[in-house]
Image (cartoon, rainbow, N blue to C red; front, side, top):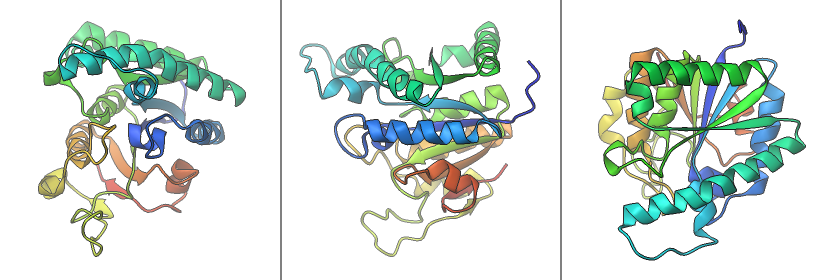
Length: 255
């Protein structure tokens, strides 16, 4: 399984997948599929995808249990819905997908780490697009990755990826919140995430759990693991290809 193509881990959050609405956008899934097809001769692509809870929330309403328990139950309902959408849309573009649900323990136990690497690399070798998500059904608040940003960073480091791209709902990391400061300046490059720790706010949408705070935390993981990380605006059509071609400005966290 000596594939010379570098690994690119792409993380798409709930706000990107829903295009700011309450349900998954089929058009955005088609946009992702088109880009992966176009990039496959250069990159091995691993997709880290949120969206299970959003997939369920617009169809079902649950009662009883704590907010965390309801969230975990919605994830259990929504995960197969989300994967069905990926299978249907990606199949139309000639792509085969595989589901990989991971938890914090999968990165801390040596045997689990080895099994995760072997599984993901075998899927890539056989032409599958691994779609990774946190196993929200069994995860607890203490080990939630934060809308999968940190999960994506751990996956990228584990696989020795060349690049992690976090698709956000804004262009990148700003010196101030651009939603409340019209003159906020985009930070194009960060040499060390410690420089910008104080700038990271919380989640920006009711459907997501991440925000810039979890992205900066992901940058620390990538820096330590030797993986370059970018934040780009996933709301743009063809955003990944544009970013790789230098046609879309974001924030680059250098190794």
